[in-house]
Length: 149
Ligand code: DAT
Ligand code: MG
Image (cartoon, rainbow, N blue to C red):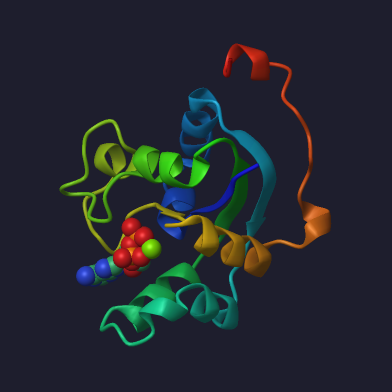
């Protein structure tokens, strides 16, 4: 079953949007299989954003992610990687569609509330980086037959 890594960034936690964000993924029908509130070390932040290491915004991004707690999550479901990106919206909240998390709650590309893996391969890398196997729960929601035929 496909899984993705999502992280509510420090701005989302500080603004009290944790429940709102989780509500949207639950309501969509995805399954929560891992969840933790945590402080992020510089090392973890740098590894997570390694692909952006040479970008001008890299240092600011690492400083931001390590500045205050985040909520790290793993969600499961058919097509959850792309599906979660659709729920999240475009990288720049100012131009993200209304109805998306970034479109509804954000203003600034450097404060865009949430991270979501961009491909299945990236998701597997990020899940392994942020979670140990024992922190992930295998379970089947009772509502599954009411979500999928
Ligand atoms: P996404 O988070 O939509 O996958 P990304 O992988 O291109 O976007 O960039 C990672 C994060 O870096 C993004 O969520 C916010 C920040 N970022 C990207 N482009 C930026 C820019 N031009 N200025 C400041 N921060 C930026
Ligand atoms: Mg990305």
